[in-house]
Image (cartoon, rainbow, N blue to C red):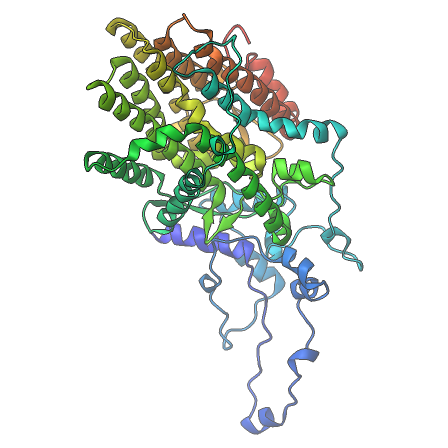
Length: 545
């Protein structure tokens, strides 16, 4: 316990170094009474306060300390009776011991890498000139290609809309255009909007409860942010409430009659949230701004999101939307299984198998919710229209197989379902073990449990894994995800091409994402990444790609 407290104090001292205070000399009371007192307004300001008071109020907001986890009370003030230490002595006191505080040194190194001086209370290393030039950050120029391709983000909503409309009780064919209704009430419904907003509001309230473990995210320009991971509790409470309401006779299955309306409502909700977050980002901290979403194009900024990790009432909105996505997906899967049982008197084994796969994935994602904090999208991408559309329309992608089974009545023998289940477990184990390996390595690279793994050092002070799952392919978690999607589509059979559109979309998405991640790592790690690519030559499939 003493060792942990000392590490915490040293980390706090690195970010909030105590400034030397003038020590009053021992004088007689009468002399002290006659000594002139300089008014506070005329006293010379400290170096860090000059930076703040010399800038406008809106720009001074960008200079506030970035650490949000170290309370100021943790640094005890220097008593007046203790002589003020010299500059050299203060430096020796603040410097971490060489044997114990690896974490403190790693925090300071990361902050310097991000352009932040840990000894200046969170100020950036570059000092402003008389015109405060560094604080007035110019927006990036968006290329015409990005501007023209930005509306393509709505394909994320049009694809599930096509799947829902192409597969109905009349026909379920990939080669036939779906029959779309023309009445406005078939597209817009206040009740559907209430379902979507109600889901987000309920899980926002659940996130405010002191339930779930509190974990620290990765060191970033925003400092060390804390997150309460209570997604598993929210998911179990939601599913339990839905099952209880079903057996008590409440019409919970009416949700399945509004799938198209719910999809349209989720799309419009994404647009409204993207607009609200864009307006909110005008007051965001300078270090919270997403570079990809800080351009001279309003459309690009809306799609990418200007703020990396917006928070409401202390709740990270990005984590909240991910949690709501998993809960909605599992809820739709359970309701479809219940609807099959209610209409036919029993549930189809094929449908139950696929529904169980969906629920297992959602439970896994919420049980290991802290693993999301170390992913590329969570750490480096803003919460804009693209991410909102991906997350809020994902429940309709993930449950399309269940709707396909309900509409077509397809059924597989037990040995076919067993083979699909085995393949699902193989993909799940690859995805889970590789994600956990990466998460533990990023949180603590010196973890003794990972000492057997081979690494490549980088100029950024980090290391790249070149053994374990990350020595087989460069993105083993994506490989596991592709195997999972394939296993979930095998029970649908091969009679309908529409059933295999989801694996096709998954392959295209994984290919684009892995290329983007490789380009990012190349820019960040340079020669070290080149050595890793020479060592691990394939991105997704060993020996193929």
